[in-house]
Length: 303
Ligand SMILES: [Zn+2]
Image 1: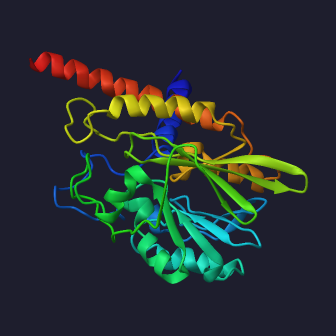
Image 2 (image 1 turned 180 degrees about the vertical axis):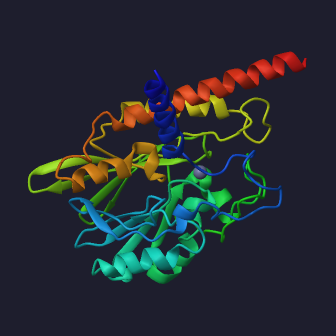
């Protein structure tokens, strides 16, 4: 029995830490703590490596930053926290890739832990910066007046040079990536999908947008009245996507490092899990519904 309880405790701890995201309001130290890098893994060096085919991991250990390569030009997704640009650039160079070969930088969403390094990366690569239309103003404000965080988590303002809408496919030479809007976490939160091949085996790659709502005000938030509907749309969207290799802005969302460890132990296909996107959507939906029920109950008892 003791062993059983210990096992349950350990596994719930693993799940909690695996799905960790931006600090919640409770964790955030003070109202004027605008430091984005209070999670050491967000700036921890990580050797770059091939995920599958032309898809590479180039981020710090704790933030998913992905490079998709082709002879016609490369695409980078996300840029870590402010200060991560140098680490990401060194990783890219270590793969033998010239920064100027990066033609596009795509953004998952306008929070400091993913958009923080983008201004620097855009400057150093000369790439076009592409994000969903609904996040462009928050990106341009550098995180100021976030509907949930106010001015707490700021980053160097990002100038978006091309806006995308839900379902839009973008073609860069040999590459094609599709934007799936998964709003809620931010209004323009985006899931990016593409295909990578090894020989004739082509797989659906999905960089799943964050579906968490850490201490978000889900009811009666005048800055985001449609937030519940948006989250519900996004859970369904992610659950329905063709998804062979789930990736994420926070690798723990899709148990990425556990899968990588299994692959290093010899399971060549350990990163492939067609249920991975659905499992994350289910976990996120259940957490969200519990949070929403609690906020509704609190609101009712306050009346
Ligand atoms: Zn976020």
